[in-house]
Image (cartoon, protein in one colour):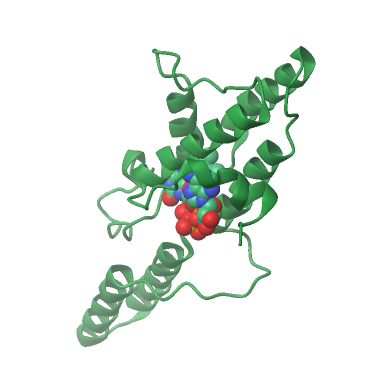
Length: 194
Ligand code: FAD
């Protein structure tokens, strides 16, 4: 989550990062961990900082820093061209589509090999997901010491329900509405009943 990110590299000579900007482990902003609105606030801040340092008049400097603050405090709306690299939200939506679709096409009863394949996929997925803060939290959730969050892979129903609960865990963290898991199959496999 953004809250578990560290403002590494954000030394005193720099303005505070706009809300929601998450840094990568190398201290640079992580685009796939940050929403497009926060990303825009960051790029505006950088543009205005350049304008500010180029400005010779103190009035110009003040205007630039006020505008930088305003840009950071009120990110622009998130409409954007469709051929840009994904932000954390677009990446998330696409990934949930993949994950729930994998559950929807999972065998009704999975044999040992099918279960091992999915278990391996989830293990690597949770390490390689391109938003590292998301991946860290997801791994921690799966590895809960009680064992209660381990993937349930015996059947499609079990796995689909588990995936819905995993998604709800992220929904809760982000303050989104929880999804009613009794409806996961209609949402992701059969389509809504009339
Ligand atoms: P999404 O949450 O992307 O959902 C897409 C659609 O799935 C919804 O419209 C709904 O129809 C359906 N749906 C919703 N909930 C469920 C459910 N429980 N079961 C089945 N179907 C459901 N973003 C962050 O900012 N911080 C994070 O730490 C973070 N962690 C993530 C971890 C993972 C593993 C993934 C895949 C994504 C993560 N995201 C994170 C992205 C986040 O979950 C959302 O994808 C993103 O905020 C866009 O949300 P959305 O409202 O468009 O709908």
